[in-house]
Length: 109
Length: 122
Image (cartoon, rainbow over all chains, first blue to last red; front, top):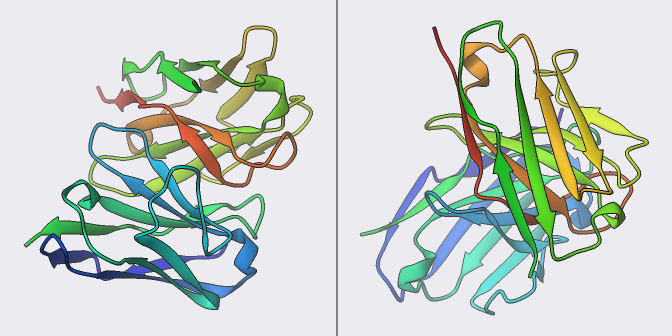
């Protein structure tokens, strides 16, 4: 099973600042098979990025993804108030063992 | 508009059973694989089970294999999860999720429901 480790666990930032979230895999993943979600309490998770760097429908361009091999990054260029949430990476290259990272909480400083 | 609505959660004793349902609308249900993903209290997301669009293939996480059964009724646009031999560690919010790609192997999820809470406790 591929283990995804996200860091940091919590990111304390102010609106307008840049957020950089990391997702590291225990073994190499094809870039096609790494995605990112946003999750707010009491809401459905929301797909942000698929294929490492492609934005899902309706996702603003302040969200971007990058990386390859075992190291992947989600960047939010300028935090808006609605961006404070928990973010998860997920891989699906190791089927049927689809796995998520443990999450990074982006909180208001 | 795509909608997914889970139901069937509740309080159940250890060793008991529960059946979750996910009613969907707004897309061609049979054209997409579907999955269940759960979130235990204070924890992250965990993929539980997936099913192809035709229901011909099913997939399970090791933690639930042999206890949970996923199924779907394409005539009713509804996904199910039969959960047997429930344990305290199965306590979680269970989300229904639609695959982004198509009907074959579950992959990643572009639409989710809001979840239904399952509590396993005596």
